[in-house]
Image (cartoon, rainbow, N blue to C red; front, side, top):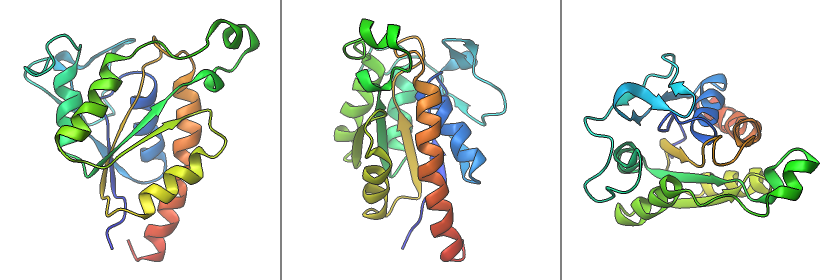
Length: 186
């Protein structure tokens, strides 16, 4: 049985960086593709993330989607993709909660979902605010032979606060995966 060994992501703020931090903190290998110049919402993707730069920013199949090449290649190079969305429940303070009814459209996250279908990769879409999210993700991971997991979702500019919430969720998921790896002799 294959167990989760590596998490890849595109390095954007929010879900992408949360996934890389959580995986690294739980002893998983990390990597993935990022856009040329390592650009992200906050400026530059931290160098501690060992990401490879794509030659072009946009995929020829999604020229209107920023950073679409790295999204496509991360889906292609993984065994499965986990998309974490931010739904209303992910906002942490009352003022933000009242103002936000749903997350803004996110072309990059939507492109990841399309790429999973295109490359015939298993896909799980989860709301970070779902109280059963951890269990849903763990059940999904346990039912598939996934060694390399791509994690995608909105950035902080689209869904403020999602990075912290996604990190907390993914750390709990990856800690459980770490226990399974230890039980299997890694």
